[in-house]
Amino acid sequence: MTTDSQAKPVTAAEVAEQAVEDFVSFYNPAAGFQLRLGFSGTTLARCVGIGPSGGIVMSNDFKSQPVESLKDLAFVLLILGHEVAHYVHLHNAAEQLPSVDDRSLEDWADFYGAKVMMTLTTCGTKLGPLFQRLRGTVSNDEVYIEIGNALAKLAESVYPTTSSSYSTPLTRVGHCVCGILSFVDAMSGMKNLDRSIAIQQLLYRNDFLKRLISEQGQAYMQDDAPARSLAIHRGLQPTSAGITPGLRPEFERFLRTCFDNDDDRITRNSEAALAELVRQGLEV
Image 1 (cartoon, rainbow, N blue to C red):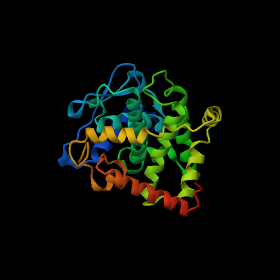
Image 2: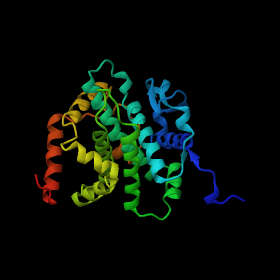
Image 3: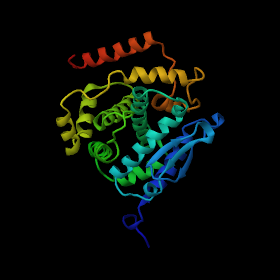
Image 4: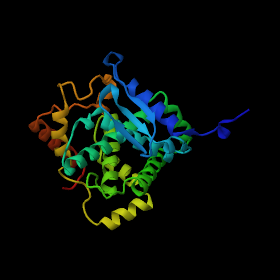
């Protein structure tokens, strides 16, 4: 008889299959949302095609990697979530963009992909039990530390590149962190400065990330990336319902792909959010 402790670990492919099944379940069946998953090539994961004929392809090497810890799980889901972001935002339809615009879409995919990871592990009926099994009895703080360890692994082994279409590894980590905080704020229904600071301290506790921050020595978030990606996404959105409509109402707050807010409303919302954080003690 095989006990849980002796059970064969799941693979990245099995995690991806469960993740895709969960993500599709976040949509109303009537929407007809589809997400294909395949395995080939040497790129860890990539988004191919557009719409029902497209999907996500994982490499043959990556698919066989064992997932034995929260760090392993977060690593796989952050990579997969990034490609899901490209897929549901129709990024492959945005052709011949200058590298600065390509970079803004990659930054957005990191941000949204982190929200995908958080939604899957929190709400997924397939991945939720795996997350809980790997978590065991560890605290929420320890979960964030393990996610930070996964971010460090990405920053060290996946994010480095000479391509101008990608931000620096530390900037990409920063966008992932923003996605995690966005999910937590949406889940709780409010922004909380102390909570956000505490989570960031846990996510950045890894020694490799600390060294990156020390070596960078300057602001590492591209200030105009959100504005650039907003303009591109508005062009990709066919109707006011969103780029990929059909999410069930309970998942809209986490994963909506609607960019219909006018600039004045965005400014008012940003000012209101900043005012609330100042009220909580943020110094600006």
